[in-house]
Image 1 (cartoon, helix red, strand yellow):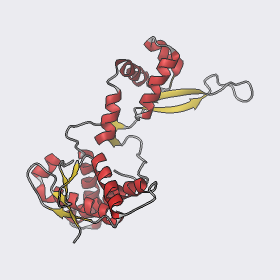
Image 2: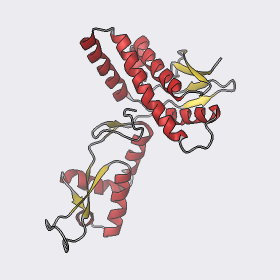
Image 3: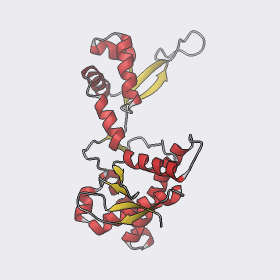
Image 4: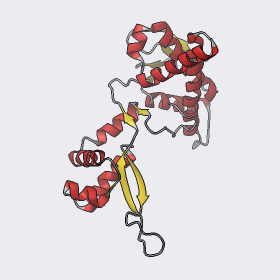
Length: 248
């Protein structure tokens, strides 16, 4: 969820939820998995010709699979002239691939313990440096993360001609679903989050983790504004501890 740009993710950062599942699913195709294994084992940049020769494929077939792997974030792409020549007559740069530094995790139901760990680490650092209570520091870190979540919602709203509360709510639910909360709207308008991305931690450290989750979701909804929803801490067995209630 991190980053001011909702589409931005630092190299080496963990990818989970729907994006991680899509990436891992791409490796279900045997030829694609074989190509990924070759590129990953090579350790450097690999051309389409090299990958095709290693896998015994036509160049076009190899290119198709390499592009799919790149689109899912499993490979990085660069353009280089491998002849070493420059200027006119040097030829077009070759498209090269290497294993991405991004990490992928898949769990069903979706979990995001990496996010919880990062927020807890940020809170511990701030508590130590600024001599503040760690619960307060964790709430602040969670609210900052909620603002990043709101940025993703606003990115979805940019293409809409109308930003009525119903559209804002829809965008919020889409983003929450992307992050594994599995939102469902009840007849009274309450949004029930059927999955907790921090489930095991919340079971063992309920007050701390559920408080973090409440702050994260409250900040996300508050920063989006005019959703007609408010976050409420209402623990219930088998569900996320937070419900999104219609605003009074």
